[in-house]
Image (cartoon, rainbow, N blue to C red; front, top):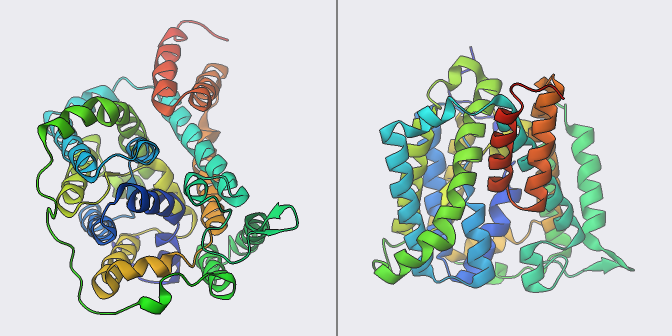
Length: 397
């Protein structure tokens, strides 16, 4: 029987596996929207710890991508982001406590779940490649392929391509190594690259001390903030959250952990995300969720127990408390291309869940969801998949 907690190099490596998803959006919302760096990472670290303790398994914590992307693109205010966190918390709490998510889950075909997982995996891989090429949102904001490196290109080729290729080869070489986990080696490679080629931004101003984030430092959002975000970001975010962070997450957890994942029900995932978003509201962090992609990332790089949650959560909270906002200079040492490598392997792990799709109808539903997602968004893909799955019940392709 797998223990509830393990604290070893594999759990440590697995705990870092989802940084490729977390850091770009978190740093973007800090720089563009003015979110509190200490609030963002303290609330996320605390959420990691709480969910690990409750579920007893490795549980992903991620930014809500629809809200995050829209917030960065339109420079939403801090109060508007706070309002979206509180509204998401209320909606998820209502869905989780009324049992409506459980009822909905009964009528969602497995092919639709697999389509959501494949689409999420492919989106992660595409984003990882963009980060290696210097084409992600954060890199675009800085107008640099590697914003925190002194070298941007070798000839006409972005430096991230070389760093990323080295990271991919290293990951493949150590992927099944039980003594030297691939995720840990790749992150260490990133830090080494940052120490040698990095700009060292902020490292000279580090001042260790005791820095706790304030509660509601800007007060309560206005009614105008709430009325704006409910249509701008909360309603568009909800289908992706329910599809990927509830249904696909619960399904993948049972695939990975079997009966040990019995606590990871649709209702409990909704309620735990409600708690996470309440923390974000109080500490002025970013809206948070779970997600099948994050779970695949942690699992791919070695996480198997709640120990990984306690490790990454403690690191985040510890760095915030000891270094305050200065801990960002430590994160800047990791090249974006290395985060891209993590995304590529996490995405591939998630995409491969479709191997249990056997019939032509199921495969058609899965690839249709992927096509619509790539052309539009994941919510539209999921809706198209549901319509198609039910429409094909009496027809063989």
